[in-house]
Amino acid sequence: MLHCLPDSDIERFLEEDVPYGDLTTTLLGIGDRPGSLTFTTREETTLCCCEEAARLLEKCGASVVRCTPSGTRLPPGREFLVAHGSARALHHGWKVALNLLEYASGIATRTRRLVDNARAANPSICVVTTRKSFPGAKKVSIKAIVAGRALPHRLGLSESILVFKQHTAFVGGLAVFLESVDTLRRQAPEQRIIVEAESMAEALAIAGSGADIVQLDKLSPAELAGLVPQIRAINPAIKISAAGGVNEGNIGSYAAAGVDLIVLSSVYFGKPADIAASMTPSETP
Image (cartoon, rainbow, N blue to C red; front, side):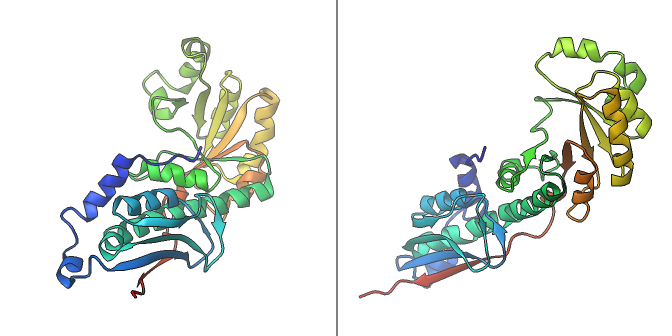
């Protein structure tokens, strides 16, 4: 599922940073001089958007001679993207490529750590991420979490049925809504019905309604460990997801509680990956 961003996005990234050319390189008169640009990890990194960075450099006129695939986990000090070209081409793409690599790989690296921690406690757990990515950055964010071995919880409102209290408030409350689950299923027979619970009582009511997934919001791992067997006793087929407050420090405890899915958004926010970019002139005869 590792997609590539379209050229239209890559061209937009370039236009934001180089709308009318590079004034510094032009005034220094170095634009035609040949050189190379090398990107290297400074820390353990799960790569993301290396393909887009390479395409970006090519659009600037550089020639890419090495490109390590997104999703690859690298140790510190590993070269993973190398391009040759004129100083003009390299300077046009250098910073945009670095920003894209650092932000995307930061998300991918955090995601991979979380997934590894969760699966160490529960090998069958599925980690999915919410749609709380920064507006305008969804394509990069989704590629990054997939590179880190998670999956999107839902890509948008059009693709899934996820019922919150903000929905049930308009139909008379959760109890009233749960009486209509069968009707909802007939209206959308191909869709799973996910209903959020904010308390143990709500979770047990949802389990008995015929919903496909109960999403437990902001319950502690200890509360979940006691609640999961009760839910399964009511409906052995229902899937159970835990959401709200999950992070790298506690995801193992959430996974060990016996849920099927962990829903989180914390991977979108944090330090970019630390990546070095080295530009050097080529030797001329």
